[in-house]
Length: 115
Image (cartoon, rainbow, N blue to C red; front, side, top):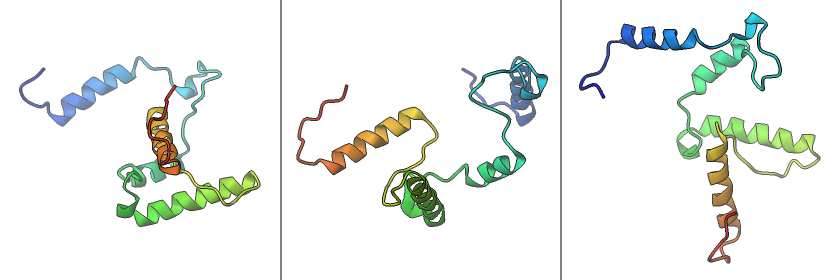
């Protein structure tokens, strides 16, 4: 491990070198991936919300409101607008949140089993 941090240009140089090893979506070499190149509007929105952590919804009231609207709309699509939930950036976080919700819904279970 280095004792001192690197300059910005060096960090970007290292990252660019690594990224050159990746295939690009516009190369025509990627078929059947679960991902695609995001639309520009999606990138812009992601940049605006990248620092919002709805694990602390009380800090980001507007963002939490947007999340609740989307969840309600998803519920309506499936015939039940009276649902609750959350969005996460990954599966591990989603699993932890699901266990927390289960615990909170069933406080009578003192020794839950996780399989």
